[in-house]
Length: 212
Image (cartoon, rainbow, N blue to C red; front, top):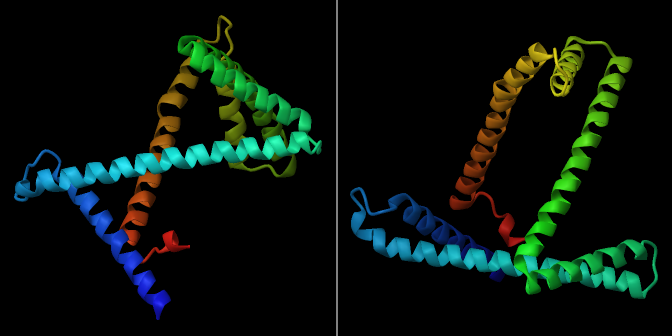
């Protein structure tokens, strides 16, 4: 009976907090028939959002401490992969020290490393796409696979910095502006709808994964 009562209290608190937060966000600047409640719900919503921010910051801090403890244990225990752990720990110490001494230099180093890593991943993506297309055609020839190869070739040829490829460049720009943009917006709409459905399930007490 105690477990059921505790579960009911947890669900009731979650639903109440969710409803108050949604109401505060919907009222906004106090427009509409419930404008008198806007200052109260707004202050409560701000407090809830600040608590969420603090909780997320503490979660990140705990994750960083756990990461460092795991790699320190690997280094002092001389287990397999200790060299990579040493590199990670030295990089972490260097980033923290640089951020404390000079934040501008830290941001420059971060952008330099991030751009280099992104460029390397973009270069690897080319080979992954080509290998994937060749394997797709080798296993089974289909119209979808053929279209994939054609679009891949158009995009890759249109990205080449060569003269006389304006037609491929225009086709590439159209593909990126229309079909790719439409697909990305469809994915974002799907994520938004899934978030709304999950939020509604939590508000009505159907989704109780937060109790686990």
